[in-house]
Amino acid sequence: MTVRSFKKVAGGHQIVLDVFSDKNHTTLIYSAVHGITADDTPIDNALGHSLKTGDQTFLLGFFRINLRKAMELSANAASENGKVSAKRALEFFVFSKAMGPAVSSSSPCVDEEENEP
Image (cartoon, rainbow, N blue to C red):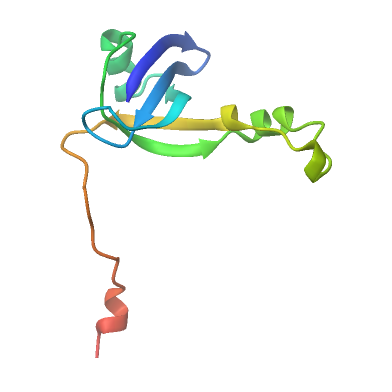
């Protein structure tokens, strides 16, 4: 991810991020996603002292839809003809910085109970 901006907000920090699918930051998949950290967590404290605009970093977390923002953005969409884009409702809740490289491939999960005799 590349940091576009970083600021203190009520309850933590908001980071505006460009998200890339590769470690060289060349394949952009999401632009201007809002990342969120929670106050007084290790990641919030660490990023609050080290993150600057333009930094490239690897963060762990999950994407979520901010339902309040999605409802606000789609308030007048009552039919398919009235549809609107709600891209800004996508957020990334940040847990920590990545400690190692991303996994490039994986195997499907196996339910161990199914394999028992």
